Amino acid sequence: MPIHNSLSRNDFPTDFAWGVATSSYQIEGATAEGGRGQSIWDTFAATPGRVIDGDNGDVAVEHFKRFGDDVDLMSRLGIEAYRFSIAWPRIQPTGRGPASPEGIDFYDQLVDTLLAQGITPWATLYHWDLPQTLEDAGGWPARDTAYRFAEYAGHVADALGDRVKHFITLNEPWCSAFLGYGSGRHAPGRADGADALAAAHHLMLGHGLAVQQLRELVPDAQVGITLNLYPVAGVHDGHGVDDAVRRIDGLSNRWFLDPVLRGAYPKDVVEDVAHVSDLGFVAEGDLGTIASPLDFLGVNYYTRHIVGPGAFPGSGVVEFADRGLPTTAMGWEVDPDGLFDILTRVTRDYGDLPLVMTENGAAFDDELSADGLVHDPLRIDFLAGHLEAAGRAVAAGVPLQGYFAWSLMDNFEWAEGYAKRFGIVHVDFETQVRTVKDSGRWYAAFLAGDRTQY
Ligand code: FCB
Picture 1 (tube, rainbow, N blue to C red):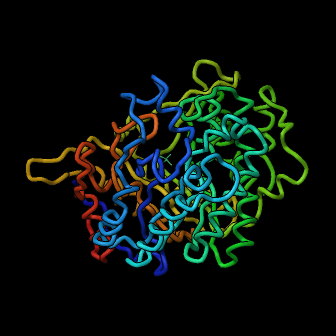
Picture 2: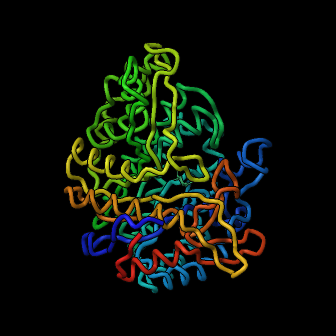
Picture 3: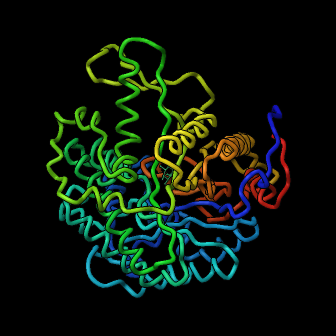
């Protein structure tokens, strides 16, 4: 492997949050235990043809039962912060009403175990597991779901706010709205452009209302939202390329950044989507609520989008391309400079709100070797390259305050089922045995303060 650079945690601020991330449906399993209600992912995964190999999260990596061992493992790796998500249908099995004591109990235990090991909990309230009953009542395209989300946020704040001081309202509302209701590739699998836009709005409204709940109930909490952001570049210079870039940047990035951080939808994108929706669901005062002040913005970064007008310049149709760079098992180009670009761009365009990398990582076809280890040099290179880019962004003045590797361990990768492994810890899905990959050892050494060459 060529040595590009050397890297040390000392290149980052001293109070930087160093962690790993997971989410409830991807790891917990025990979907019918602890009084948990059904979520849209249970329904979606049970529908033939939706998830590769018919996989589902019923068992996942049994974190519900093995969380104590998993926290021990994090502690052995020197992980200092853990971003996990709370399953809404464990707290409110039908998405309404009082909090379920059994559901609260699980997260109480998880939080206490983390704190006992000196690991700071970062709780995400919504990482895609909407209670099925709320989907049956209209799902995110229905305005009431935003109010239900705020009520749920209040329950979590009441129960955990004495110990959890870092909250993320939503994970990647772009995915919930556009993959869930637009393309149908994610739960609940609906495909209607107007519904997708309504869903995006009500997700953001729910976010703003939840921020207000959290502020009231946990005044010393740090509150943010996590967006999946992509730098967007053109395939080449030419007719229609700039417009393709503008459109995709508009829908992927600005459609969420602008309302949340500026209290307005981007005008050019409002025009782009006018043939799909007149945004009649935006009520007076909504944008003010959506723009409730935040303590940080969570950024998930995986790759860059390369776009062009394809064969139809001027038609508004955009085609995605790649540049022949090495890709991960997801087919996503490995592009650490894209991380530098997106972090510096957010700071330049939206001001100096603290940023936290709430996810960054890669899937590769890892295998357990005969020596009992998992050698994943490509993931080490990926993490090191992206940390180096993050360090450059810090040096360029970006107020970056944390980095969470996706993911602690291999897990249920949504529509890809168990076919894609993102962990720095390998999981044998038959036996549930955890094996720290070389990348996990590398991250542990980095966190321990070793200056690494890569
Ligand atoms: C993100 C999701 C996360 C994981 C990674 C690979 O979009 O937030 O749950 O699936 O992608």
